[in-house]
Length: 96
Image (cartoon, rainbow, N blue to C red; front, side, top):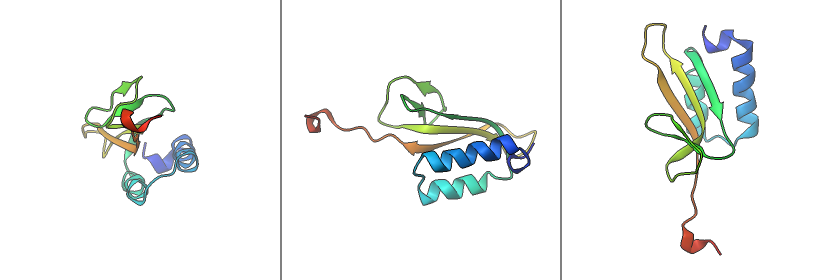
């Protein structure tokens, strides 16, 4: 089912837009996958998702993200991952 055809997916995507401050690029990515098949939407307040494979890590890492969306362009397509809202770690020497 395409994302725009699922009321649940549309509501979830709208909640993400309200909850997180998405960049212009991230908003464009959401529009791009609008006609795709959304297979999973996950987000976290603690920890983050890996950029390369989308796996969740309990601890925040330098290159991890707060939102992960798994999708397919069509039924036969390989599942793809979109990650958004990067975690900005503060170097230890700057933390007082």
